[in-house]
Every structure is written in C-alpha cells, then in structure tokens.
Image (cartoon, rainbow, N blue to C red; front, side, top):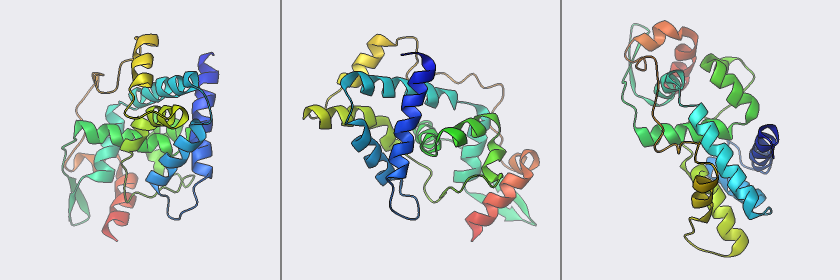
Length: 205
C-alpha cells in the first residue's frame, strides 16, 4: 500500500470513529472506543498500518508551534490588565497525549493546525477544550488486535511495526529539532494575540 492509501485508511478509521460518536459534548474515550470497534473489523496487517501512520502523525506534530498551542490550551495563566501570562512547563507524556487529541479531531483539522495553529479560531472547527488529552489513541491498534484475536496484553502490533518500519521513530524516542524554545509568559499573547484572547475568554468562563 502506498503512502496516500496508508493515510486514507488511517483517516477513514478516525472519521468513522467520530461519526459513531453519540454524546454531546464530544467524548474522547467514546471516540477511541469506537475507533477500536471499527478497526477490529479488519486484519492484523491493517492494525500495523494504523500504528505506522499514527506514529508518523504524532511525529509530524512534534513542532515548537504545536508546543505553543499546548501551552495556550492547557497551562495556567494569570491575567493582569488583559495581559495573559502563561506557565511554560510541558510534560513530555502530556505533549504526546495532546498530539493524539489533535489527531482525533480529523484530517482537515490536523493539516490546518500543522500549517498554522491559529486555524483553531478560524470558525471552521468546534472542539471541546475541556480535556485535550487522548492517551488511549496510543493503544488502539493493539487493543483492536486483542479484540479481533481474543488475546490479552499483547504487544504483537507494536513489535511488528518496529520490525517493518524501523525508519519511523517511535514517538517516545523521537528527538525534538525545534528551532527555538516554546514561547511562555507574556510572549504567547504577543505572537498569537487573537488565539490567546479567544482561548483565554473560554477558559475564564
């Protein structure tokens, strides 16, 4: 399967999981459960493919601008005279789970955010920012395998993906080649004024 078909399969599974979502507001855990349900109808090679593309997408989001976005959406801030002052700390694990949450929002959102994080306030998307963590997406391919073949605590898909695609760095091991440190403090408002203002207002409600 070529790269385009790989991605088409991956994003279609994400889309089907989202379409199966019945709850309002968006429920991340239910979305992930539905993705497992959809994916488990396929075969082992498809689970490996999903895992491969997931790793690629998580790594594609390993950008300093996405780290800025994480801080804006997740870190505490102090407001003084309409100036937002953000804490700059980012947990390595939480940043991975955040990137999983971005992926769950779908293909169009993903590619817009990769290009410009201010696409978030374009009016094209409606996302629940109450919980921007989706750790469970990391285990979808393995869980689908366990469901399909009635196994428990399996690492078959992860090991197979490591073997078949050694050129794809695992997100746990991937190094960040950021050209700068993420903005923090008052810098975020300086560089992303509209995004900070809109998110700040949402967080303050």
